[in-house]
Image (tube, rainbow, N blue to C red):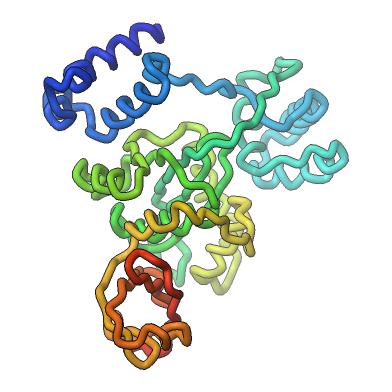
Length: 353
């Protein structure tokens, strides 16, 4: 089966390798996206025909960091309290998991419970070696909030997570449904938080504005391959619980704010509140693609962007010089200053008009 897959992909790419056709031509003929073809080419050059084989997750239907005793305990817990919401079930499991010295994250717990109905008679599971990978995904979900300020409102939850271990990296929860370009700063911040430069990012098909031209430009500028595909079914199952659990958390609350909901979601997703940013110094400049760039002259130790003034004492030594200013409409508190591709400083907002 894998051999057939390798042959099929190579046959599609063969005219490109023989310099008979460009990838753009193959894209038009086969209706396979340029980003996918580019990824296949990269895989072939890195690993030969083996790189074209369809990768099967070795950890499918298995659970990480869970021994047999813990799994038996979770099976019995589920049998006794299967009617409880999964968040309440997790609260009940926490104390015993601490005793077993085998604390697991909520997403991992969800995956185990979600599979128990099918596999309740299993006595053991396979252990899987956890490898560090730089493959991530972005999933977007509409969340109805019927009691927000006594009005029915639809909010949108966008999550950036690690595809290998389901670790939640970052999220935004807001009324606006952002298209891909308006998610650029969120993507950049998520990569910086995680501290690992990704090779591939899976993009939920619900996210609009992901044209082939835009995805191609992102790849050329950042070397990050965005792949449009259906979200992972395990993750979809996980986020479906969020609506119900938000309702249960706030249904009796007299005053509810967007900030309170976001704090709840952050804890719900097990995202650390004061997580330090990771360091990916060598790749940081590529991430500037996700920001807006302006040419500005430095005066009075600062620059003006969108009629806002940004200042830094470091800029005193660059008075009168023309610099590149990188700005995000979703992060107005600061701008990054570069001179001839070299980072100068981050200037802070001092006056907003």
